[in-house]
Amino acid sequence: MIKGLLSFRAEKPILSAMWKSLALFIFGEPVTDRMPVRVRERIQNQQLQSEKLISWVQLALVTLFISLWAAAPAAGFNPDFNLVPWALGFYLLFTLARLWAAYRDALSRSFLTFSVIIDIGLLMVLIWSFHIQYNQPASFYLKAPTLMYVFIFIALRGLRFEPGYIVLAGLTAALGWGVMMLYVVQAEAGNPMITRDYVTYMTSNAILIGAEIDKIVSIVLVTGVLAIAVLRAQRSLYRAIIESTAAQDLSRFVSKEVADRITSADRAIQPGEGESKVASILFTDIEGFSSASENMTPDELASTINEYFQAVGAVVDRYGGAVLLFEGDAMLVAFNAVTPLENHPAAALDCALEIQEICVNRTFGQGVHLLTRAGINTGQLVVGAVGTADRLTFTVYGDTVNVAARLEQLNKEHGTYIMCTQETVDACAGAYLFNFMGDCQVKGRDGPVKVYAVNRLKD
Image 1 (cartoon, rainbow, N blue to C red):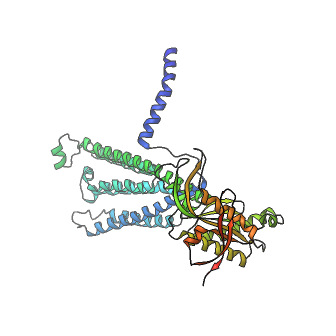
Image 2 (image 1 turned 90 degrees about the vertical axis):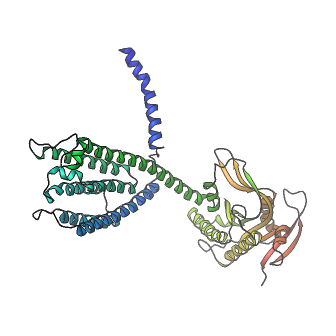
Image 3 (image 1 turned 45 degrees about the horizontal axis):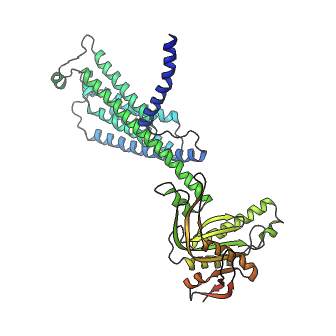
């Protein structure tokens, strides 16, 4: 006995692992239970939209049922019994109430559960009433093609992407049909009307138990297959919403262009992967911001710098730039590096000039002037990811980037606010006024760099 107990304990982890593998194969990869509230809110909103769609489909169905009933001939009806118009009228009112509740976001889980039971239960009652309505034995309703509407109601629950309601609808239908089959067997004492002859079953009011069990099995199997399909789709939907939310969050920490590039990549971006491109780089920095910030409280400082970045960021977006780095009060902006931009040197200059104009003509926070210096360079650079396998930064690097950063700092020595290189001037010849500042020695370069100050656009 001890050996058997030990053997069972040894087999238990194996069985558990087998079950997990089987569940993963059938139901798909599960979604973590620790979803952020904002993700759950997005999923809830999706479900609410689904319930609105379900309500409209139900309204279309009940309208179809009423139209078919109104068009059907009245011959053979029992004049003393006609449940159909009452049932359809009740279902129409219930559907309208459900539609109203869906748009008021007042559909509780108990109401949804009740709605599923009402759908299937009302259909079963209608089918049951056929033998009275047409003055036939109870077995008459077992051959009613109206049973096919069960599958419509089961499939309708798939619109919510919640398999529980599909299972509830299917099990309610299977149980309901089983009860109706038992009712037929017990309806006439001493005459269950059961036959094993298929021809007799098809040509008389006799019942074939196997045929009714086939219907129940079909309902259960369709329910199971649809529930599994919806569960797999639900998990894929949840993962898609989580990834979409993560991408939106990512775009708040990096530029939208970079976030799109990362999330739309065919495979995971690896460290060192880069692409050589000709692009324009704009470095900006606020003049004297360290001194100005000494007189601000932390809240005032945060409010001022955020207001500044919002204004400058709007200008960058307008000219097609991508902000790749915020460092203190400095920004690294790339044109034609992340997304294609034809006239990127001009876009970088226009962007810098408008930033300068904004900073001259307005204040930020509590009336603070934040004049901005800018350095611009055009040339070959590398766009890609640097870092480790676990921690990456998507950026631009190369001599072109380094020179643009040095030009921004060189403004201090010359009393200027926008400086660019010969490469940028050549790409924009004739469009702007440039003042040649000479051949300047730039840190990190062996030879001098021809440097120009940019004042304003030509008329």
